[in-house]
Amino acid sequence: MKIKTNYCQSSYNEEQAKKNFENAIVSCPENLEKVEVDALSWRFGLFGRQNHEISNLAIRLRKQIPEVRKILKISSHKCLSKPIQDLLKEADLRVQRFHNHKGKDGKADLDVACKILKRADLLNDCRIAFGIQ
Image 1 (cartoon, rainbow, N blue to C red):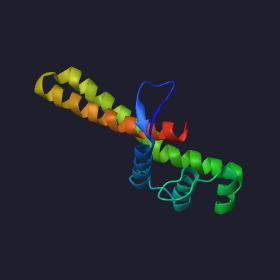
Image 2: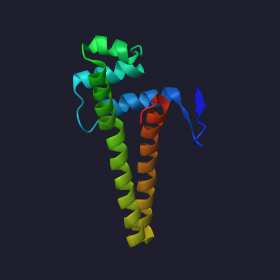
Image 3: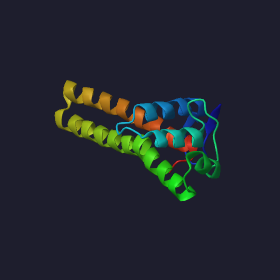
Image 4: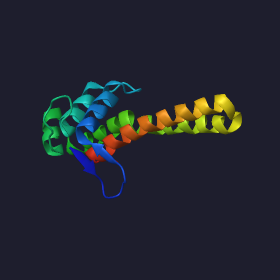
């Protein structure tokens, strides 16, 4: 199902966003602890699990609700927000190199920057699809 957001011109596929989110968890630069993977999986219905409200998640994880919220915030930062920030920094460096080198070398950097920005956009679609700030 394609979803069009009110505040964004682009549309995204919710199922694809789910797959991208699962991939982001698996390939997270900072390894997530088991409780972090479980919290994200149960909260957002990833890896074939049913999604749960925070109160039910707290019961499943045997934690208090504020602690579960903190786990979700930290783990989503590790696998989505931080990688997006890193990709944007890397793309910015490539654009700077493009301006410095021009010609063939510059063009290659610009192509790489475009690919990096597309990856960042896919991760950001995960944040939009699942309402993660």
